[in-house]
Picture 1 (tube, helix red, strand yellow):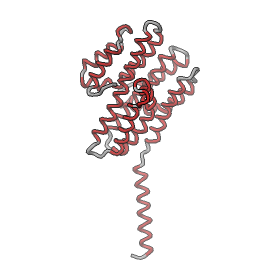
Picture 2 (cartoon, one colour; picture 1 turned 120 degrees about the horizontal axis):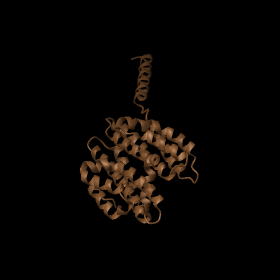
Picture 3 (cartoon, helix red, strand yellow; picture 1 turned 30 degrees about the vertical axis):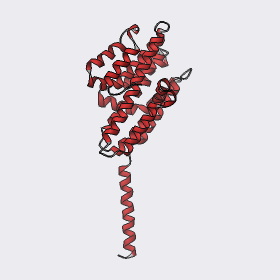
Picture 4 (cartoon, helix red, strand yellow; picture 1 turned 180 degrees about the horizontal axis):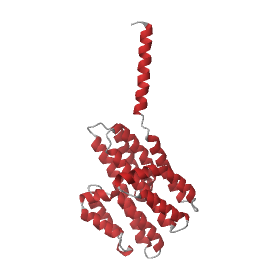
Length: 270
């Protein structure tokens, strides 16, 4: 082979490699990263003393393509519900209650997206997307760690380990990695439901307006884990729904914790 032919072959190989890398690039990852960043930004903005609902609306628009994707895929209507809630917040209508549709609704969509990626064919691509989506809900894991585990960071640490396992998992241990991330998500949102009902127990004789907010949060948090519980035990799922949709006086955290653990078995919440 002469020098000229050799250089031609090297150039051709480089060109083909470049084309191949472009074809395999994940064009959706940047959109997912933007979605997660906007989700966290919304959380920060909505908790300000005087939220700028126009600015929050602009951040929601960054997330809306993914919200609509899962609305269409799963027969939901989060985009319509969130837009309605934002309109009510902008006019001052039950702001503390209505903003939960936005905040917790986005968390539900995020978890649904993670589950969808777990079913994807290309595991190496889906693992990176799952890690990107998780950043949108990481603050919830941090908050629940502070509420239940203090400095131990049990939930966030378990999530980080599960995410790394997904990235490195081969076909032989992918199911184990999948179970790890699904379990820590279920545990965290089980604790989210429990936390809101614990607050209701403290407030039901003194602050009914705050209880309404807590109930709105608990109901959407429960949606995130409802299918898992319903699949295992429809009766258990019904018991939890009845409590969450019942009178504040019948919301008992100790009873709820036992029912949640029965539904999420073998997961222990604490």
